[in-house]
Amino acid sequence: MHDEKTRFVERDRNWHPPAYAPGYKTSVARSPQQSLVSMQSPSVSEIGGPDFSGLRMGRYDNDLLLNFTQGQALPVGERIIMFGRVIDQFGKPVPNTLVEMWQANAGGRYRHRNDNYLAPLDPNFGGVGRTLTDEQGWYRFRTIKPGPYPWPNDPNSWRPAHIHVSVMGPSISTRLITQMYFEGDPLIPRCPIVNTVNDPDAVETMIGRLDMAHSKPMDCLAYRFDLVVRGRLQTYFENQ
Amino acid sequence: MQQPNTQSTSELILRETASQTAGPYVHIGLAPSVAGLPARDEEIWNRMAGPEAEGEPIEVVGTVIDGNGDLVRDALIEAWQADAKGVYQPFFDLRNAFNSFGRTATTFEGSSEWSLQTIKPGPVAHASGQPMAPHINLSIFARGVNVHLQTRLYFDDETDANAHCPVLSRIESPTRRQTLIASREAGDGDRVRYRFDIRLQGDGETVFFDF
Image 1 (cartoon, chains in turn red, purple):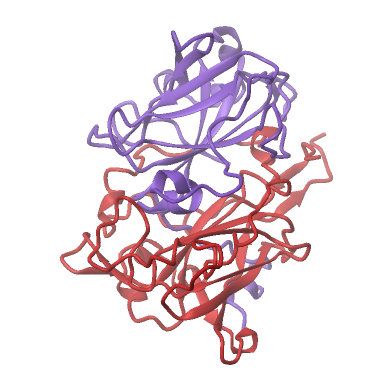
Image 2 (image 1 turned 135 degrees about the horizontal axis):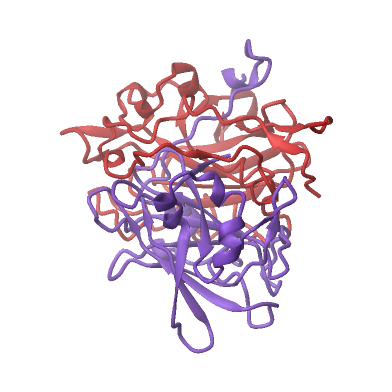
């Protein structure tokens, strides 16, 4: 399935946030000080990855408006569609790949035993979704727009509204977890976690765009968020 | 409207979407029952091998430790390993006797150990054709970790295979090489246990790979 001639476009470590980003205080004691050890020639251990097309999904797994109550009641908040395509660096769609997401409710509170923010839980909102991309790499969730919330970093740090997004891609080499922010949010440039990313163009890759064409009149707005994972290279010439 | 990274750049390829920390609430998305949410029909978790799986049943446990020596209690770990014959089984199905992929997390209280119930993997061939010593590939996600860390767990009772592994040999420092070796302990029942503590920073810092 994955032959030894496959490899992936090198991950640009200057594009991604560095491990040590002191503006985000928790990274200080959790960042390795030694250099990463490069695998000069990836093996089947790095080239392969899990295929989740056999994972049985629940009826509402990609619908956060309905999944916590199994369709019994609706959560509070701005109804949105979050959708996009998973493609690789060559623009090729990544089909049948697992996309998972989690988020706070409209008040900025997570349904997690460690979150004790003042804002209340919404009895009709869980905050987790998952889906597989289709043959063209498209995915889609229905949810509510999460609220911003304060967190202990600087004396008054706030997270912009965001949805955590996890994508597998075809290999453990393409594995990626990121966060989608909402176009135009004034909290984005003030966020210490956003600012772990040094390149402003890289920050742009994490911003979901309002897409009126895909909104539903009298129902919900739509945000488009494409995910780009590392591209697969085929090498046709072996070392002689 | 498209995001800028979906248009061609001067480098003729698209740029990868940038990584962000998985944050303290990663469990909601990837381990809902740990967060306190109801489990869905099927969840990806830490029982990679059932009793019918071929090979030696093992348990792998460990902690994640930060640069202050404190336990990292909100880490999520993904595992990817070959079966007992050294073959990866990519098609994930909870009805399989063995799945190559699993997830686990450190615990909020107590000893904060992560654990995997699996079988000991067989040796897998390196690109060079040489066998790599049996290993489990681990990815670590946590609050404060901006891009997930990638490491490998090897076994201390594979001295000979470890000595000849082309990947372990790439690590120049013998001291650092040792950070990838799990130690065998007496386990519960018939399951052998291996311990593998992951040190994110400082003394005994685990080797992390770029690939």
